[in-house]
Length: 234
Image (cartoon, rainbow, N blue to C red):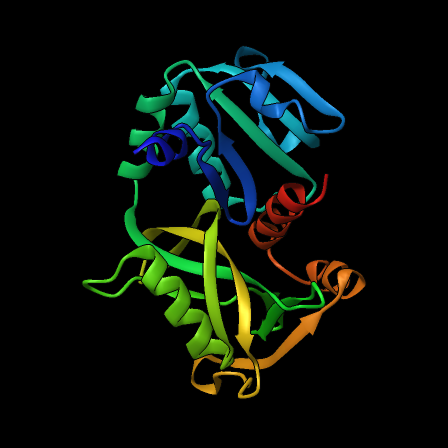
């Protein structure tokens, strides 16, 4: 129960059109960010005029939704947003209400050498993950999807983070919530890409390899790896 309580206080790590648009409860949640640009919501007219890591204070819910619509229509590569709403719970509920929510789970798998298991799919490096099936828990899904997509047998440890990202299916806006877990490799002797899921390669990558792969990946995946690295590196 205590773990669930603290996880419920976690930020909403939202990626809209692959642009970070995190909903936070307090300014203290941005203390780890380098070169943050703190602004008041009333000072912002257009998101397109902003660059770098922007922390926006006292954002009314209607303005959160307005920014959401802007980001759904545009892709901003050189900026990330940390939004501190006037009412966090209301803003989060209203954001969720704009979408059909789909649940998924995946894993950061580590072998004995400390290498990370990554997959190459649709010209992007990614982490194994997939949708929650009926009757499954998030943990069950995470293990099943990793093993199906990579052929690697794993043991689940703990949750690293949760991400939310948007996409559309037949003009219907979808919000996918993905819970990410740290896992240990038990056996990779049958490792192979799941071709039916358009996975071309599965690879164990060292630190330099991961850094290179992330330059050809999604910003949400970079965030997951960053969360993992901040948890394990003093």
